[in-house]
Image (cartoon, rainbow, N blue to C red; front, side, top):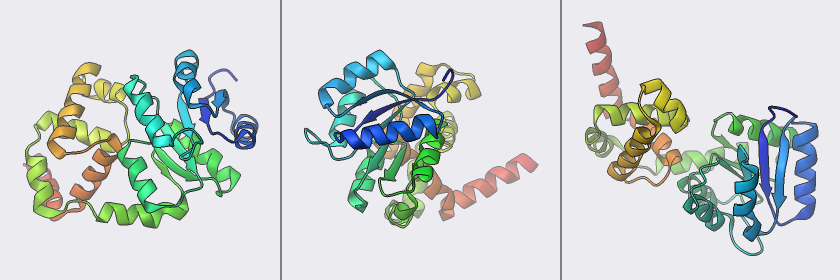
Length: 232
């Protein structure tokens, strides 16, 4: 499968690993380059296989998935992660989003839905199980509003606002660097500053913040003002 999306599976149920491997490789045209239920094997396997995407269970016998994700990030691995779990808890969804996952899927979804969602996540989209959308909306509605958001955005430089717009579109640092004609390291620095200024902990939180701000009164006013400047 030359050119196929390279996926790594982390789940401590062997039957789940084999079933998902069958689905992804034979019905999703992806390549499962590693599968394990042992947290100790995850980082070495990542280094060896260099997957494009990690599909991670939230509940593992030896640890929890988010603790393992933090360990992966501490090792310098930025491979996108999609959670595939039985948990439909709003708290788990919120914690996963804050940890910076690209997707949150449920194991009781239809097989074709899972394949499609994992494929879209590999292409850079954020994916959430349909059954979790109401809970996602509730999480979004609990965020900062109005003038509070406006004052936070006002603390960003013009370049940081540009980078935030690209992050909100789900683009990687490499893509943002090319779009803005700046270096990859410069993008990483801007993203770090944005996170610090807005008190955010993940790119997903940044995307959610940008969406909420655009929908707020201050965001609408800012957009109208920008449009008037362009016309003049």
